[in-house]
Image 1 (cartoon, rainbow, N blue to C red):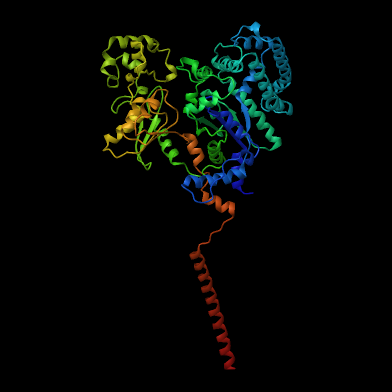
Image 2: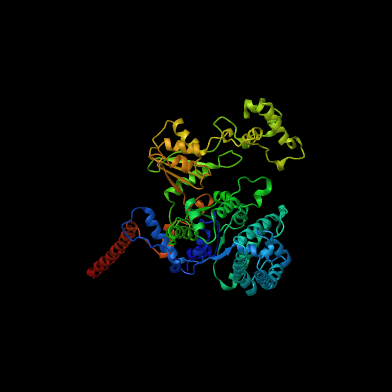
Length: 605
């Protein structure tokens, strides 16, 4: 065993993958694939051995060979099971009130036999949990023993499945409604049956998940097994931030697919209707979140936006070839950073991702890259105000209201009385020196204030250029180059206005991360004879790009250490050999001289 083995063995010892994605995208599928016990059971597509079309096929051959030797199966922790632990914290009477509150039919129509069965099921598992819960609370630093492990990783999933069957027999969809309500309550109040918001409890759900991870880590101290965990599925961004801040080995993977594919998958399930799908989507992607609702609500768009690795799960009728192909690549890179280099798409999207950080928008940062048909980058853009104007994050309400920093504000903002009156009323506290927002600048969004006055939601009032629009304009601003049949990379996806510009510029392919909610795709891009191709981005970006593609040490050094290689310097060897020969010649010359001298002495006798 070498130091090389020690370094990479340490990386495989502890990995946490959080899955996120809209219902129907395939999070559960990925969770099940990662929990396969062997590489052969995982059964990814075999790589080519020759006749490669491109370097991506050669890269796949490398990661396939690596993962075949290094496969680690993952513990599959379902967030529904974590919700179950909070449900089991309740007395049966409180649980009874909670589940009956989500039924749409009159309670009296419920089957008494099912009521009885539900109570028996609940009380049986509640009793089994009690000793495990007490042990975990009394041994917070080491919550593992065989009984605790058995409950959380065997009995708890069993309870969730039994509860699901009973509830759905009582009323179709009642299980989903119960767990959505309980999950929201937990994030708001720390308990499954209370919806009173307590800001101190927003991380309680994540802390409960972390307890299960602690059980596995302490178990590994005696079993010496790897602790690889997949969390299925994260639907609140602050849960992802919780694990990201605690574990460098945490990666958030978003699973995406076309919306039509996702809907068809859901409709193929028994007792799922279009109305059910609309309800699920409204829960996962609320139209607007206000105030501290953001901390406890589901927000899939934000989860996808902050993901480290983006996977694409197309409709392959249960074969999962494409998703397995991607998992082979990223599991290998997590275990061995730098084993292959980024794809062309990853390289361009990473630049777009870095560019978005320049945005001074208060709502959302977006980056874009435009390339020619060979993916040579021609321009970079981000959503921001026009050059020469002050970004929104640098402007202060107090400066405008007190007529300071004059160049930062428009004539309209300085002189329009209704606007200034509304702004002053909304931000009246900003004049109070006691409310200093912990030293942070008190900025404002012009569009929000203007729409508040107009009673509208007009996007035209935004001060910022969109990232894609900005990237297009950079080309004309600095002496345009051809981007005919080129590519547009965007960390979001183009709105209707930017989609029209991309079409006019004859962009061949738009690579995006999260679909824009408007009609840009169906109405603008899918029309006419030169329609751009739309492609969901797959790859690692942000911090994961650096973590996965930066080698721990140069691969040449790995080969030298791991293979025990010693590549000789032929020139150096010849020089050394020549030096030895010269030394031997000198020795021989001395010896000859001695012999000649001796011979001369003998001849004189």
